[in-house]
Length: 440
Image 1: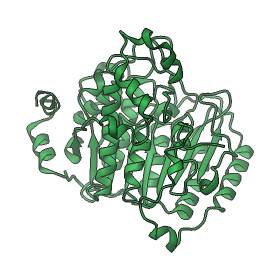
Image 2: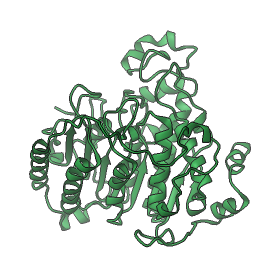
Image 3: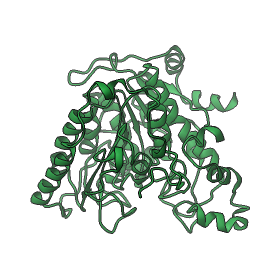
């Protein structure tokens, strides 16, 4: 089709041959699993960068196009299997979302929004410039595309075709069953996890966005087949959920992990809580697949964030889990300083390809080169004098509470190994309250 031609025009003839020919192999790295051993799926649609929330909204879908351009300029696209996602249908989106909500999304436009004020309020949407989740031109098609990328990545993992699947356009972790929230309309993460559950007995969800992963947690709050782990700023900060003692209900008790943090979190402090907690999660839950929401708003210098992580500190969280060699899906999320988001996600793609040592700090010429001035470098240092309000003794108590909660998780045994993949508690996704996993 003419639209698919747009994507291939961005690639060299060599890249196209690699993409069409199947999995793309590269040179070995001395420190990580070599690209030749790690099969990478990369979802990207050339239209995704054309969507615009408008009205000065800080969410910019254009980020994914900038990442793609940087990856191309570094020559990394030849090491991935590039996938152009198919839009998800109404029926496929309503595998999680309420029918009337998705029907509204595909019906409403900027031109007729004023005729639907009651529904706008009901679904937590509004006019451009007034709310986090505006009715912009093509909002339904936008949702179809980014959800298509995440579900396709999950399906490739289920088919054992890949080891890691990327969809930087995804990671819309705030969207609820029948409600938009925090720039998120449809929850591609939940849809992707549901796809993984068709094949894998247990799925681990890890969220390193600065905001609590409330939409995903809510969807799986009642099940022990999905463990959700969120590291986030807590206290007078959107969305206001994710307290330490919020740890699941019923079968899902202790399968929900929240790590509430304060302003100024740096690489050292983050690693001190992340590594022991995630090590215990992997020991107790033993996931058969992992999904990560890698929002870049936890980076130093983000317009909406208040953490002080470097690219290396952020990337370490992904790499730490990747070394367990469990099938993994890596998604985007928040991130509102565009040049930093693009650089970070490009670097993290390179890390998982085992190519980080070959990525020069001086950025190669690319389509968006002027965005990266005045330094035009891949890495940015965290702020030196940033106030870190996370006291060591508080973090130690926090870590101790989380580790104690995880000790209550039933160790994986024969019963859990043999459970049928369709054994997910229906209430955890199709809650009668229309909000995903109901909290009584």
